[in-house]
Length: 306
Image 1 (tube, helix red, strand yellow):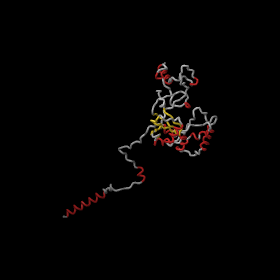
Image 2: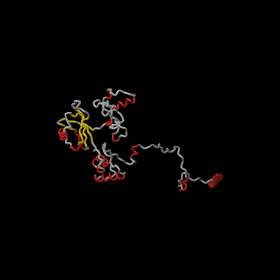
Image 3: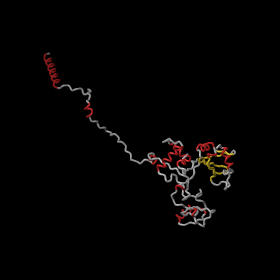
Image 4: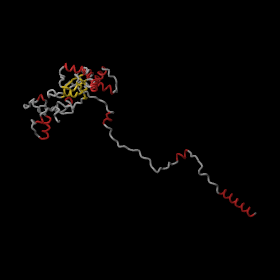
């Protein structure tokens, strides 16, 4: 019994000695807050997947329509062909002041308003002469084409035209002209195409919606889109005579002179010859017979392939 007690005492002494020489480690799971200095100096751990790079785009020139938004706006108002040049012997500033005075007379005081600017352009014939008496422009027209119009209608007759306009409740002052497209009467056709030029946009839209009627005959008008412009100076298409910078081309012989100065003795007014087609074949083949059947049309007609 005594030996057993001595053994327990010895084990207790050894345990106390081991605890005093080897202290118990601190709890690793305990939370210890970091200081601000430790936070800002702590390196961010590197990720295994790097962040995607910012995409780079190739520099491309903006479209022309986008560039036009940053350009100064200017408008070209053409005058009537053969008219005297407006603002002659006037400086740019004097012309600018005259135009502004004319706009003030028509009470055009609103700036940066596209709708009102478009309205001024559409009605330019009412104020351009106020800036300069010779600055006379043609009114803006709205054309409609009438299909299958009876050829017994004579629009050269004032009484017939007046009756036609009254039946359709069209103001005579808003009609610039009514003309046949082509020559259906001379060709003995029963129906043809008629182009009505109007100076009022609302009247043109009314005709397109409701149609036309004359003595019980209903006619359906459509918007009229004219073909490309043809120059009467050089006989080429794409521009008009007042814009032409080319040499004149004679419609009689194809020479580089006006028809008034033509001295071609072989020209016969009743015999049509297209100088455009003749000159083109001469450039391609070197020479050609001017009296071929394919040349028997006017260079100003729709029969010309050029």
